[in-house]
Length: 430
Image (cartoon, rainbow, N blue to C red; front, side, top):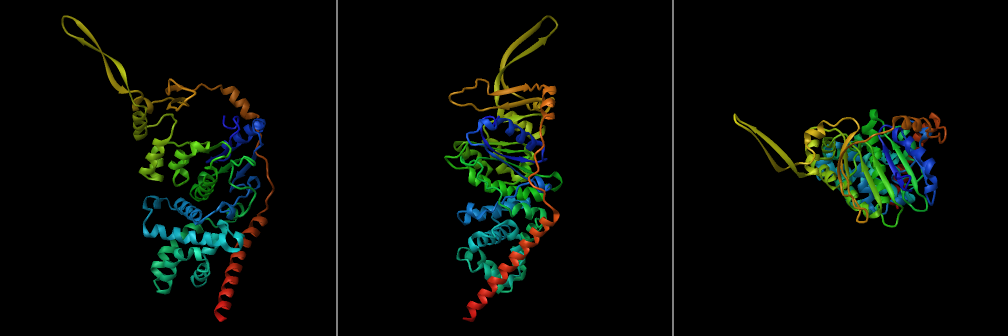
């Protein structure tokens, strides 16, 4: 429906290409509904021939150091989910500051020519006696790197390793040729709702590698949302399947503020308990309570109780029958009871849904709450799916190309360190 209405779109496809294929084919059928025809892009780390390349740390899209901080926080919390509830702790904030400093240094170095996540990962691996002096040449990050330099100068190596190693170990899991290939290119930018260049972007995860891919995709999503949540842009839809498998900080504020900027957000999940486990109770509760529309199939336990409470209570007729030796009496009464009890939500059949929808001032909906069965025409659906075309190959990528790019990133970082160290030595000699 969003594609038919001319929305720009971002789709997080947990089991690629279940949703991406539908999006691609609907776009082909509805391109005429767009004033400016959108471009279609795919991010996929498993099949590089059908994946575009995109740099989530594009220096042109980072305006100040808070962008670097947000990126560092997103990637590290995505890799270390147990840190989410420990934000503010010394050994959580220290690695975030360390990665922030490296991102911002690369953003400033030679106009950001090496400002990519692969270069960040490689630069982190440099020796301390070379890395810290190089980072300290950038005035804007002096405050961030000062605690690390102080620990190094005071020979507090245990403290330093505790601060830095957690970042290095986590980020090292992303050091693969396939990830480096996708993350170091510039086929498109993340301003998907730019009225002059609208885009439809599908990113694919892999259930077998969800922790690694999910952390990188979380970074894409974090950077993308910074670009789309602005006034004067094209209407835009953000669709997240299996939302708890990625981490995005401040999703609650996105839902609350993006409505006025014509951004529609759709979150799909199996159960609210997943959200609490991965996002923490406070943030999960806010996300659930701030959504305007909610639709649910069969769920049990705490989720069914929460939904029942959200649907509220209504006055319901009650009838009681009393039988004694001489007569039978029937009494009628009204009682305030759950509109849709938790027991009913827990026993919904396949295709049966309950929900609560919001309306507009000019389009009032009398029955906002519903309990209904969705009737599909299976034959027509299967016929439509059989006509779907596969997402086309973008370019055939060889393993050698991918490896060459991987080693090129490593060489560029070594050269950067070498040149800067030589420059610093020359400055001292003068």
